[in-house]
Image (cartoon, rainbow, N blue to C red; front, side, top):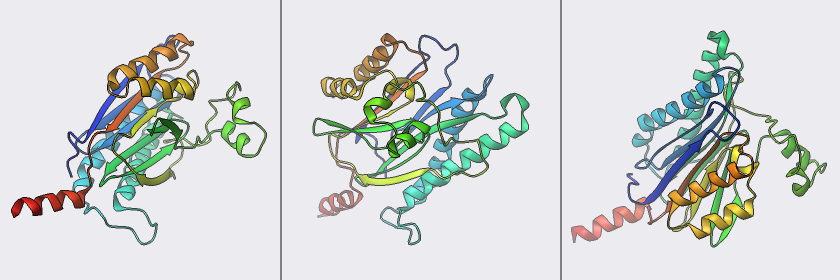
Length: 273
């Protein structure tokens, strides 16, 4: 299914005010309905290599395998759609590439990346993530975080050692417990849900969320819901105004039209008569 024109997607990335290199990578395929964001880590150029290698190859893998999937099929073992399984396989493929490259090149040893991937199809989405890069959904004038950080801080919140308010002031925000490319195998968190017209989805690195509060993010998306380029620009500008201590990346996607595959076939049937 071609989603061209059904969604509006913009992506922006910025080095920030402190770092010399941008270790974030972003990419998307509007026709496929695929968005990918990665925040690399590792000495020398490792972070840049890990994130760009992951984004590029997840998109390539998806472009090769998604078109052959018949929408509406469910895997009986996992309960997920075949689209979700394809996203998971793409991530596993990227993990293998990054892991092998890190073991073969001493200068890249130990490199890895956080990752968040979302795929839209048939008025649904499949969402997968690793680490603390996030996905938010803005719906009915309300912003909600729909990924859960794989971080030490989040584990401490879950165990009751911190409240979310206390955690926002912690100095240990960036200690992730899962990352792509660190181990030979990986298990991303995968979820599925419905996508509604006028939803706006935000994928972002922690360079944004460490420095910009959710309330400001929500107000910015509300104000610029019809101008996503400006919304992305304002969010990055705010993170830089608040210190810009890390690379900052955002991808925004607005659902403009229904993209139900069944409705598409129904419309074609009507046209035949």
